[in-house]
Length: 78
Image (cartoon, rainbow, N blue to C red; front, side):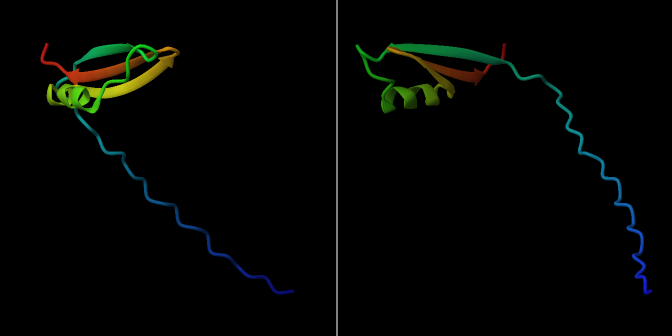
């Protein structure tokens, strides 16, 4: 009877997770735009571009027909 010896596996080296230090906590302000889609349309490209130039970033959209809720956020210095 022949046996093949399998060498033991060497343990993998321990890897430390990188540390990230945050000196200042970010503060956000929020904006909500509500539109009745039966009476008016969603924000047009020009309106969205104006919001973007003012620092607003779209963070979500929710719908409860006929209403649509558009949520925006931006960093604040407050």
